[in-house]
Length: 420
Image 1 (cartoon, helix red, strand yellow):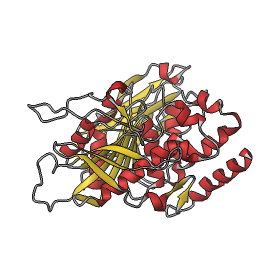
Image 2 (tube, rainbow, N blue to C red):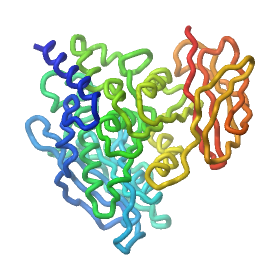
Image 3 (tube, rainbow, N blue to C red):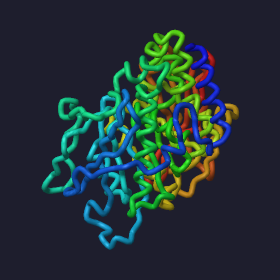
């Protein structure tokens, strides 16, 4: 019987890749998820508001999802009631929750922002700094500061992410997570102060994983930025691979249903992939392969030894600049072309409306676990529409070129891998 289920869901996902307007992709009913969910405000007195909205059924009962909401108007700006703001959906990573400070940061940038909890919990009410008006950071970082909702969805542990696969999908965390994000997007678009045609999504770690899913499922977004998260969790050095392998005969079902590699081929939302060279959770080769699957506009920002976490994940200025370029008519990030090796040099064509100030070749000659490899960098020379970099050493097995413009915004070429 499980083999029949595997075949059915696998075909459902593949069939869904043919067109972005399909009503159902895998277990998700997109027509239903694009409807505005019922919601209720929990708190509206401070600069960051709290609310609950309807989620998917779980264990036979209806659920609610908690979220923070902030906009320039909740921060005391745009009080004329006529201004419409672009919107952004913020997806926390594993072990995280809705972060009030994250929503506040995007409201300061001029966006209406919604940050939901994807673990069936409600975080502590935010406390605000009396001098700056900003939420005090990391208030909800510890799990003991959150309370379980009586009608919450699944928690975010490995049993809910992996072991529940098979049969009814209503107890699968990936199903609930992607559905909750799309529902949050539908709610955000419905708000009177939000320009429904200018919305984006970004997420960190497991939130980056979920960003890959929803950017492939929900074609209403104008931009997506997965930080760290990617597909191919079932291959190579992924720390999730052992949990997927333990599924036995259900392994392929999980891959076809919930690994982003199964849906990224349908992603046409402009997407910026952000990661580090040595991320233990989402290895660089899986990251590049995930980007390669995307047929729509895509860019990369790979940072040598980028730290993994919520703070480091929402810090890069390129996230805001990329979303601004799609939602606020901001200047786009530079766009590298395909690197070409010519003798002892590499030529990287670049299209950019901003001046390129510096560039570097980054490479590693180490072998073994990618998370343990040491990287070396050497300067490259920006030219008119091109970067000239030295050719990496013959024993370099992985390399790429980064370039930084006059705003301090950095992007990367595609990552090159030598056979080992």
